[in-house]
Structures are given as structure tokens and as C-alpha cells.
Length: 315
Image (cartoon, rainbow, N blue to C red; front, side, top):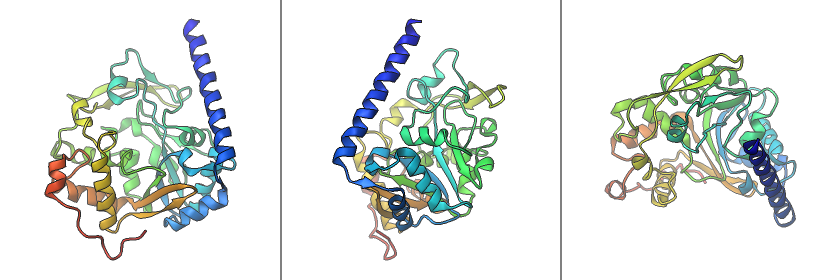
């Protein structure tokens, strides 16, 4: 009973904080509309029929009239009825994959477990026509033309991001693009698709020990045991999303700009970018062959300076 009261109090406090933050933004920030967001997405090269994997910072967009549902509607407007949206709706008790693996008795249940990925994924998960993959830590949700095919049987894949996962299927879609709304090149889980595709041939030993089996239930309540491999925490300390790796985030920003793969622009108040998924994956593989990965040391970056920008690079 005490734990339930604590959870209720924490939820009430979080709701109050969000409401207070929304009031501050509403009174101080430039108002952004659904139509304005869709126009910004078009300037990033987002087009009808695209399949987007979206990483986002809702607050960076400014004060959006209609909130998170309006952002989702703008994304749907941008890709149209033949397009597809994917958002990470991960549920990570303990905050990391490693912590989830160590949690006694943990069983993921999509009927009661939401997501720890923020307000936009929360709103997306609650939307009509959205399908969610079954996975104990890295569930992905999708809307649109390819939603069913991208999310099905994730729990049967041999690894989180490998063959049979939403990421590998996404790479195979025509007009697939990775979209960063108000984020740097750091918090992008698409990078891990290369690690799982290459396995032990990946130039950095990123995993800790053998795969663990985590339990999850599917939408019908059937239980599945799913293999996951925790990341080595020491290696993760030098990864591109670590707060101290601004050098690596800046390198990847300049690298993908120089290669002419990244389109940069503003969506609402947020500096944003998009990269075609197949070219993104191929370039990551090429960089890995030159000892540059999302774990690269300062010395490895210095040994491979970013080339001059392509004359076809777009801003």
C-alpha cells in the first residue's frame, strides 16, 4: 500500500511539474502550429511516402499549439497516408539495459507498461492506429503503411537491433530516413543496428558477457523469453551519447555534413536534421572500417580528420 501511495504521489508531482513547465513556455515562447511544423519538415526533405524513425526533444520545438498530438499530426501530414512513422517507446526499468537484466522477476507487459522515452513517444503510443513491437527493453511503435511489418515478431529476433528487428526492416524500406527533431547526433539508437549486424566483427567489443533471457508478454498475454545482451558499462562511458563526448558528437555532425548525407533545418524552434537510412548505415560501416565508431577515442578521431564538405551538402 505504501509503495502504491508513493507511486501516486510521484505521478502527481510529475504532472504538476509538466503543467508548470507548459505554463512557463506558453507565456514566454514563440507559438508553433501544426502547419508550421509540417512546413519545417518539408524543408528537411521529408516527403509523402517516407518512412521515418524519429528521435525527438519535444520541448526544443517551442510552445506547440495542441502539444504532442499536434506534433504527431504534423509528422503524419508530412509523410501522408502512404508514409510510416516509427518512434522508440522503450521501457527500461532501472534506466539501462544492464539494470533491466538485473531486475528480479521483471516481465514486460505492453498492456500496462508505457515508455520512458518522453512526452512525444508517450502521446504517440496512445494514438489511434499505432502498433507496438513486443520487446522487454526496446519496444518500438509505428503508424502507417509499414507499421505492421516493421513491428511484428521483434521478440523472436536473435538480438535487439539485428535481423528481424524493426531497425533492420526499416533500413530495407524505400524512402527510409532517420529524423532528429531538436537533438544532436548523440542519442540515436540507429547506430546500434550496425553493431548487431556486424556482431563480433564490429571493431569495438561493446557487449558485456553472454546474452540474457528477459521475459515479456505479447498483446494476448502469452509469455516469451527474449535474448538481450547488456552493453559493457566501461565502453558505454565513451559512447557518443555520454555527456562528456561532445567531441564525438561534433565529429559526427561535421562528418555527415561533409559527406552530403545530412539535411539540416529548423522545425518549430528546434534545430533538426534528417539522413537517408540506407546511406546512413552504409556510411557508418565505412567509418567502422576506418576505426571510427560511436566509441572512437580522441586519438582515433585525430587520425582521421573530417574531409572537406561535399559541394552537394545541404543546409
